Amino acid sequence: MVEARMIDGPTLCRFRRALGIRQQDLADALGVTQAAISLIESGRMAISHSIQKDLWAIYDKRGMKPRLGAFLDSEASIGAGMAPVSVTLPVAAWTQRLDLMDDPTSRPAVDLVTLRLEIGTRAIALSMRETSPHWKRDEVLVFAFVGVERCKPGDLCVLSPTANMKGASSVIARVVRPKGMSQTARRFELIQPEGPSIPATADAVRSVARCVYRACYI
Image (cartoon, helix red, strand yellow):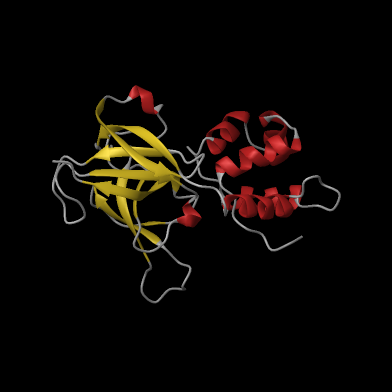
């Protein structure tokens, strides 16, 4: 088996379709529910480290067509030449009660924003109603959903923690590298609401999106 690389939900969806199997077939192989596979593929649930390991163990075997490693190599080759497309997103008012798992069309829109994103990117646009050292009042922040492993130190993120956060369904945090720890160690430093930092791992968050665009409108 080649060295394991992290795989995100939308990529897993494309790989499953390339294999010609159903979500239920994949769920049975990984020992999870079909509902969990649906959430993962839509980007609403992060893939845990244990599932990542199982994916490579099961789907990167000789004779598998396509093998997981070869499929990811092909994806990288195609994606390198893929041009972004213009996307218009509804802008929702930021609140700690915002559930990232909800259907975006169910949230009241306060505005619209158009930007360029890579094909297949799932994103959410938020209007920040209060001034902060990290954003201006009424600034629009666009967050793209990613696997937690793609969050780098300095990234501003919105995420749904697995632990109870005093009534907050989602939080805004900045990715930091703790002092004295390895170069790969990362934590989410909570900004709103304030609180102790949490590990930047798939086990600590249900869903995460990092800021890819921001703008103030007059």
